[in-house]
Image (tube, rainbow, N blue to C red):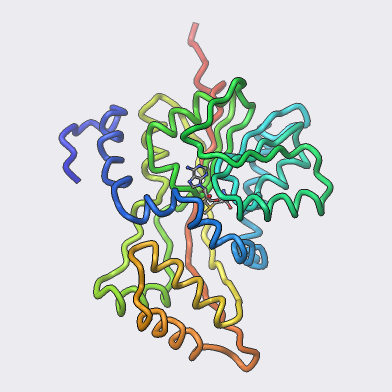
Length: 289
Ligand SMILES: C[S@@+](CC[C@H](N)C(=O)[O-])C[C@H]1O[C@@H](n2cnc3c(N)ncnc32)[C@H](O)[C@@H]1O
């Protein structure tokens, strides 16, 4: 990083810091719809993991306790994916607009909304960068998306909110031993996943004068999948860095298949720490007179 401005209370410091986060090939790939279309089929496998479900439920509870979820409220879930949070928010609010660039992810959301008979979900397949809203929303919700690496996006999220902005993202720990091993073996160096973290959203919003509430979650996210599906998921993850040759893909498949149990299943766990940041714009409107 070549930061010249040394004042972290100045938003410009974080605007400069963020330039490096947006440069890499992973960031560019994670903005493309086909990357997420490929991931959509198995994205919700995580719903079977208790630590993940507990985190999602805790986020919903906190939003409700703080008044961000209310039967009167209009909500937008930006980069909603398969709607893990959106379907829960829809049962506690007036309407949830769900925006995402990936048709594959949104198709999964559509199926869930139909199954749960949720008629107050509006789905918009759109690139956030091309989205222009006429209205503001009571709650703007953004979770686990590369859009959070850009201060410009964060400012737009704040502008779009009438009162609450809620951000969920990684917070310093994201460790999958098998992925690390495969990455080392194939790329010849250690895997670094520092780009996607609460550091930027928290500090940028703080430097803009807000006082965000933070809640951290520690967890072990286990995915139990057929060996082939697990291997394909690792190939997807590794190809965010660069395309793999046929032999490299075979290496991944062989490594993963060697771990299969008698039913052909492989369990993979990621040690994680994530964070919910909640901003209530009303809280900074106070005076001493
Ligand atoms: C890891 S998923 C997170 C999904 C969901 N928010 C969650 O927490 O489960 C990242 C999502 O960001 C979406 N995304 C990436 N770039 C986008 C963009 N420019 N506009 C809208 N959505 C985008 C992807 O399509 C994908 O569904």
